[in-house]
Each structure stands twice: as C-alpha cells, then as structure tokens.
Image 1 (tube, helix red, strand yellow):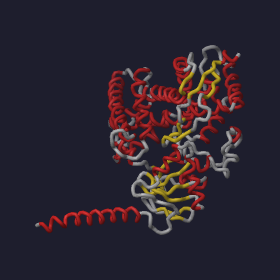
Image 2 (tube, one colour; image 1 turned 90 degrees about the vertical axis):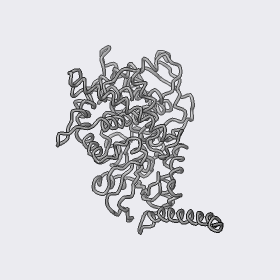
Image 3 (spheres, rainbow, N blue to C red; image 1 turned 90 degrees about the horizontal axis):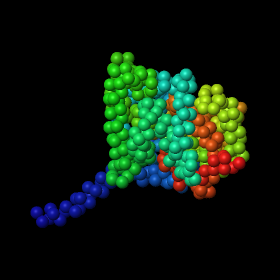
Image 4 (cartoon, one colour; image 1 turned 135 degrees about the vertical axis):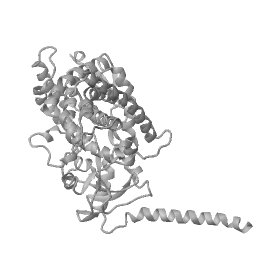
Length: 484
C-alpha cells in the first residue's frame, strides 16, 4: 500500500504529460495539413490573438496584417485567432473571391463569444430566421420609399439632440454623444421608442454588449465578455417586455403593422405559417440596435476629428451645407433631394471610413475544401478578411495616409478596394440608412459650430471590432455667432 501511494505522484505527472502532449498534438495537427498558407499558429487556444488585439489597441491595426504580408510574401496567411485556425485573406482579389463565393465556398461565421451572448443564434431555426430577416424583413424597412420617410424624422431628432446635448456647452466628449445620437435614432425607427429616459436605461448596457461581442470567451467577473453577457441578459428582458406590449397594441389597433421593424418581425411568417418566437425576435433586435448605431457613431465621431484637423475640408463641407440651409424655409426639415446635394460631404464621410473603417473586417467559414492563390483552405477553417489590407495599401490608394475626399469623385475607387460595408450577398443591408443618419448629422453639426480638439494628437485605437478615439475625442465648441 505504501508503495502505491509513493507511485501516485509519478502516475499523476505521467497523466498530465500525456494529456498535454495530446492537447498540443491536436492543436498542431490542424495546422499541419499539406499546402496550407504560410504563417505562425502561436500558443494553443490563444494563438496570435493577443498580438492581433494589441496592435489595434496601439492605434495601428493594419500592422498585424502588413507585417505578415511582408514576412510571408503572400496575401494569404494562416494564424490562430480566438482559438480557431484562421486563414487571413488580404487585398482586392481576396475580397472579390470571398464576396463572390458566399454560400458556395464560404458562409458567414462569428466567434463563440457572439453565440454565447446571443444563445438563440446557435439554433438551426434561428439561423433560418436570420435569413428571413436579411432577405424578407429588412428590405421592407430599408426600401427607398421607406428611407425617404425617415429623413425628416432623423433631422427632427438631430435638431433636438444638438439643442439638448451640444448647445450652450463649452467642451464635450464627441464619442459618447454620437453614440447617444445614433442610438436614439435606432430606438425610434426600429422600435418606435422616443422616451429619452427609456433610451438612456438601455444605452449603457448596449455599450457593454458592443464592447464584448468579439472578445476572448472567458466568463469571469470583470472581463469584457462577462459584462457583455450580463448586459445582454438585461437588455433581452427589457426587449421582451417591449415585444409583449407591442403584441397587445397590435391586437388593440394601437400600433401599425408597418410602423417599424418590430411590428414587421411580429407579423411576418415563414412558408409554413409559423412566426418568430420572442427570444429570437429579442436577439435579432439587440443585434440590429448594436449594428444600427455603433458603426455610424464611430464614423460620425471621426468626421468631427478630421474636420477639426483640416480647416479647408471643413470649409467646403460648410459651404455645401449652408447652400442647402439657404434653400429651405424656416423650420422646414431635410428631404431626399437635400441629401442628394450633399456629394462632397459624403465623399468626406467615405474618406473617413477608408482611414477608420467602422468594421476592421469580418469572418467566414469554409464549407468545402478549396484552393485560393495556390494554397489549400480546408473545410471548417475560418477566414478573416481585412478592410485595412486595401484601405491603407498604396497599390489601391495613392498616399494612403493622406486625407483626400477627391478619391471618391467620378467612378471612385477600384472595385473591392473600398469595403467599409463588406460586399457580395453579405454586404451590410443598412448602408443607405447609415448614409442618411451620417449626412443628417453633418448638416446639423457644421451649420451650428466650428470646434477644436482638446487633445491634439489623440489616437484612433481599436476596441475590436470598432475604432474608437483613445480619450473619447473631447472638443471645444465655438458656435458660429462667436466666430463672426
């Protein structure tokens, strides 16, 4: 018996050694298939995730991409991100291949963190509902005649936002206010909620969800992932209350079947006559609210940044917007024709999205073995495409670090080089909605203020997947009457 106890430490050490060997073998075997792209896999599970995130946090997200393109002399390389074998596709040819082969060689994929925050997304039925959202419900909400109706609502809400939160202020934090502006619009147009107190109750938790949606799925107190799960649970409970009240209002005739996305989701059935359940609707609404305000708020924020740094660009935007203002009667709201006149302003917004893309890239999953650029991509591997691989590439944009809105005049950039909204069947369906809220924001901003940055050299960093100003972009406001 004594000898048995003496051998226990040896047995335990042997078991641990064999387990670690088996774990490392499984980890490395996925990366040892023939003809894979060049690259480094890093440590098990973690891989190169920390380095990937750290380059973004330091303000140079393109460094992770371009360092490896140079090192491996290849626009396709392998790595390990978020515990997955990843093939990173870079450049216009890569974008074209991925966007053209959606549902043929690749499908959309999200990291585990997304599915754990939105658990209904794991279900097959929920994936079917997602297709219904993209191809049946969203097109109704985002069709041209619907978008035209939203412009006056956006303008009215923007005026109220600037009156309440910008006017009579000496210094403001731009990023927090643009998030508030775009979230107010999303709540009003997606859910018909315009009570500022109700919106404020949801805004903070939504920021937690957006910040932790793509993160290491470590559910420990204090982590971004843990905070995102808690926030999503809170929001889901609140949205389900809204859903149940809307069901009652629809039955009572107090709500319109076409007034917003929520009504359409509740009343749209599939080919079998079945409707979405409350949990699915709640998760889809949360996803729409995150996507519908987070990306636009980042672009609005960096428009403020670049206009502060480039007075000649500000002057041309101001002139264009004042021409529109002069053509309006007092109290008249913006309309579709006004938006179409904002050509230079939109070129400025596009150049902002080139230098600070609202999404850094996106993930796909290979659904079959295929070969690209001479390399084998195995079925089941994940793929990441990078916006910065073209946006900041001198082969695609001359002097890519220079802010130059004229790049978007005429036919604009070459196909598949400017991809702030993705491309192909998975291109962001809300890109026109985003264009409207961004241009309405610009109009109401420049006709009221000039401004200057409080932190002259504030960096743009990546709180993956979003670009954010390191200090929140504090600015000093100067109403136009103060400049006369």
